[in-house]
Image 1 (spheres, rainbow, N blue to C red):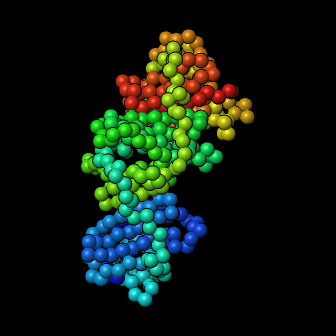
Image 2 (cartoon, helix red, strand yellow; image 1 turned 135 degrees about the vertical axis):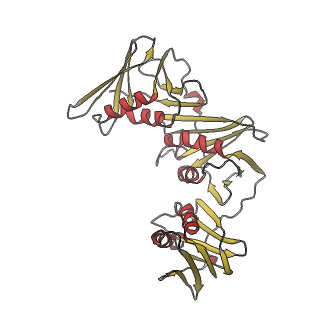
Image 3 (tube, one colour; image 1 turned 90 degrees about the vertical axis):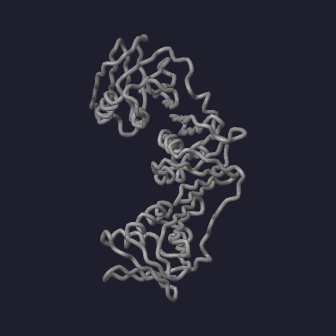
Length: 366
């Protein structure tokens, strides 16, 4: 195998796939990339057995072949070479040589035949989805996914394909994020899958902002998204996602409307003196004034006041300040609505002028 490629193109390709490579592996070969050089160009594959990324790039291939090379070392070499450099790679007697100018690196390899591959998944459920739709619902909800929860089905994102559009829901049991994107999809009936956390993070990183559609294929065990130059394949979480619609508060007789950035900044300042473990903030609503109060075990206190639009009765309620900041952070509107009912019921945050995105935060005792 031998090929030549521009350093910028090679680095971009390596960066696209490196995210799936874990630093600690149960199988040594999983620390490697699968490198395939053919008449159509260069293909790089990385996998952790749950998630697979395949990236295609044009290259001047003078000799076809395949092998596996240490992923992190190849990444560091490419990153360290100067911009505009040309890179020549050659496989000879189980050694992979990288040359550029006066630089020369020789890497150990493992046989390509031993590399585990998911490849193309067979599925009749292939859908063309607007790239913007997928990017938006992922960005608006992924922060609410659980991390290493024993309820394994919460360690991922619920993705729903419906005739009327795309929906994503994330929850860790203490908060919930829901995002809808209205678009016509050719689906006979609603399909729901749970995409693992790592897959969601990688897909969000790779999706980009191109205007073309992406091809999304579903089977009972996998989701595959063709992003053009990158093929994303992930196993699905086999489980039943909670009935999230029951969690969204319906009877909210108290509505606060406020400047999103103003409240977000005040929450960030108040959070400085909150309890580092519980991160509680007391919210006091009375008249058109929102008071934010925090206190920590050292009896240090913070209080912020923000002018808001509120016509309900006086209310005092506690929340995790990080949950509020996360929800406000993914919103894009100038103003937001905070819908509440009582001190022991969850709060619902929405943008002003849109019901497409909803954020539920459960209260906490302070």
